Image 1 (cartoon, one colour):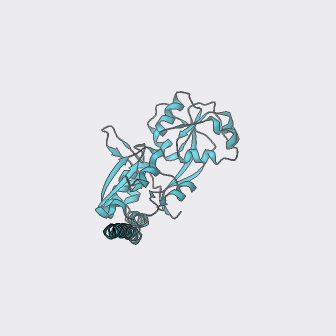
Image 2 (tube, rainbow, N blue to C red):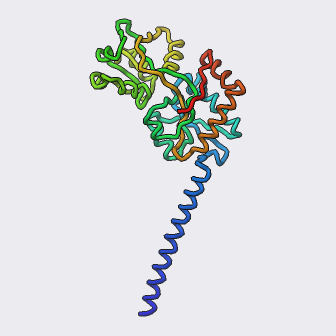
Image 3 (cartoon, helix red, strand yellow):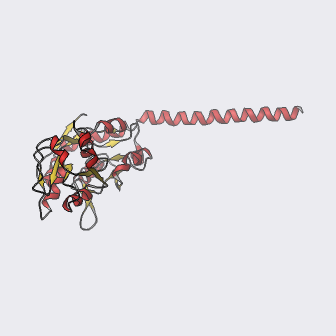
Length: 277
């Protein structure tokens, strides 16, 4: 009887010791993450960049299926500054938060606009590129001079985009949001516009201008724009050390003229900025 009681006591004691050990190890891990501020895969010498590979000229595939673009060149140069290998991983744009949280990528770096929602969900870098959200149409009968005019038309944009957020932010949004159609990519939205499924699209000026260069039938820019915009890089909330190192490297390539060179290559002018959010 005594032996049985002793066995039970020993089992309980061992269970307590095991539980304390697990908690202790978890605490050490959290303390370690807290100490380095979160570096993601950079601790192993690699930076994994998540991107929408249809978002020209920021990140897209050329005729040889190679990933190219302004952000591709900029991220590659930043990785060099940080002495890191860079890996570009195409993702579904609407899944970017999940990709970050599951640690499949270290950052979202692909013409990502700064929005209040993203500031809450991510740790954002400084703003590094100027942009604007504009309205474009292929129908010369479409005339949008104010937000009120949006109520007359079917509107397309990319899902989970800054264009969608700015449409929702219009004071009269409740009068037209039911007619807004969301597409997986901006390419899909442009195709919907060209086929007449929508009358107008809300799109990044950077992308719209680039696409227009390659279209035989040019799209028209509406007089009314949804608002000013800027791009930043999104990191996990805890990865502040990685964010800061990327910020430092961007500042370095701005100072040495490399960022200007990359911008002029893709836009024909220098659109690079460096502003805190």
